Image (tube, rainbow, N blue to C red; front, side, top):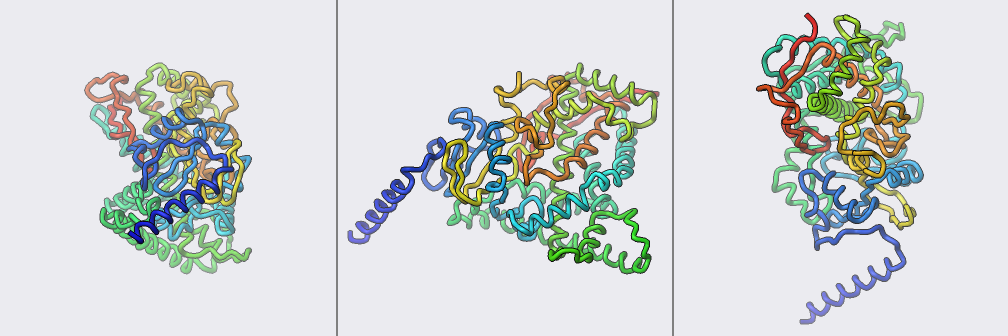
Length: 494
């Protein structure tokens, strides 16, 4: 009896203290939560849609609880602007999440590292040395060569069914491999590792939100699978690094200072030996940064192209308009090159509309507040995790006319762009933590889309109508089609 009385007294005291300390706090609206799990039961296999439903009911800024962790959900352009511009400094950090922490060498990469000096240094290295316009242009020949290879594969399969989704994924993987590692790495093992890596990044870890249930991650095998993939990727990257270091040693003394033919690992190794700042680029940081490129560059880029072709097949009018523009500019050339792309206005708006409707990361990578802040009139304490539902913002009916309709013309004569200045359209994020690789991703997307619709008419197997195409989504970190896109290609020119 005495023990029960003490427990009840402590519980009542805790509840009284909590309500007293919060009574002057103006918190965002919150849906009802359950003991222990909070609002976890309200999130299903497509959390971007579930969170959209919650914000439609409670408002554009909603406080939910995932287990014991308070999470702010932003689903309007105004809320995104406040978080990623007005208070960008406060919300520039990342929470420590078990899976990403394990896969990125203790969050030493660009995407998942907490805000601070380490992040500032590696972000600067990426922007200045890896992803600047000059560097992106230097890899033009890689993009064009790999695109030509894929077009030939599609051509050889003409008349039969082609798994276009698989081809697009292979294409982007080959481009990133050549750009980052210097050559392609064939074989099922490497491909399988990358698939497991990107899959795990989108997995939910119970231990992140209900710490005393961390054993669930161990019992389910999630923890062991994550460690195994991390170890196998590290072994692979160590081998690649050694290849590059040995190559540099053999070439030592060349002295011409040329970076021609360098891949991104070569560049990072050069930065490592420059010692121009007090920051030392550690080996693990190099490997983590390379894994970022695969996570951000392979899966998201191929997925956007797959959704774009899906929408074009479903909308023959848009396909014909795009083909006419590209055919007129191509003027009988065997292939569209990157010199042609700036002239293709309709191609640009087709891609924008695809990014609006099928935002590659529907929920931008979580942020975390580093101090108390007043946000849209609400009190947000330090340590609050933040989800920005970019997918829902792109379909907000108060910002977009007929938001569920695929209508590229909405972007014609519009200044709205995806570079982080228009908060109703943020497929790549914005502010300090916006994606630094926009130029590279768009260059691949535009080149491949232009050549596919220039060289081939694309139809569904078994003479299916475009409206019959299954557009069901599946969500991990990236928004995928449930089933890969199967097409039958017919050459447009003899």
